[in-house]
Length: 284
Image 1 (cartoon, helix red, strand yellow):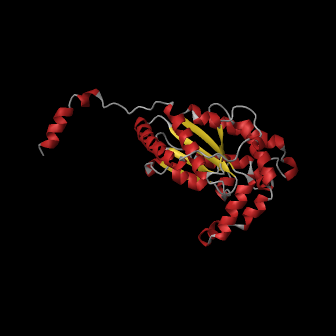
Image 2: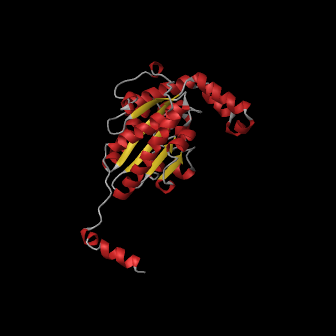
Image 3: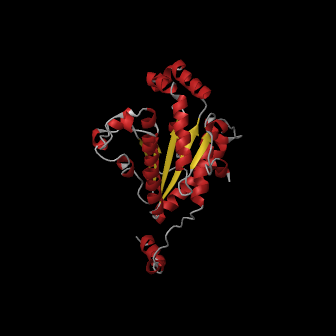
């Protein structure tokens, strides 16, 4: 199974994990996987017992948007919702840090994709702890009160959140798109060099790039602390986009196939009347 090669099952060091892998004909192979996922989506919807939450994290330019487009291309659009979590709104800041993620969870039979996720609350806020002050948390009155223990406590609450939704029928899949700093540079330059890509560039991308090592430290810590058997992380080499997309799609497929979704049977009393229903329609 491809997925087992990327699953975080023990302590990892990001610097020791490859950022580039090239699978031959990945763009062709993903087409077959998409069709299988589409059929599984229909069966899962009909069964109505499970939902699926796909979480995507990665540095800027890691390819999250295009991955969503390519992996879910064959899905019934009514059965999948994509949420991109930005800076919390005034209303969201009046609730606990997981509230806005909880209300975006998929209902049974459907998929949700979190493009940037609840992990931003132990990632961006850890690199920029000043953001925490905007949450107006009791006893947190200065940045000095926000230490490693604060973020580790949040990670434990995230573990609890994921355990809860998993035990109530939400299948959780978490992907970290592991991009090299050199490839990010190339992708940022592409945004600047191609006029039609200029709109994607923001000077803020360069500011965040200077904090690369900080982000890598935070990612490594959260991956090691929050990859659990019921909600594992998969570290996906992201320098080659077609390969990354195929690995993610195949991992989702392999995971869902384990659940053996079944379409519900027509009630027996209707089964007995099928021939009569056919006659009624044919005699119209």
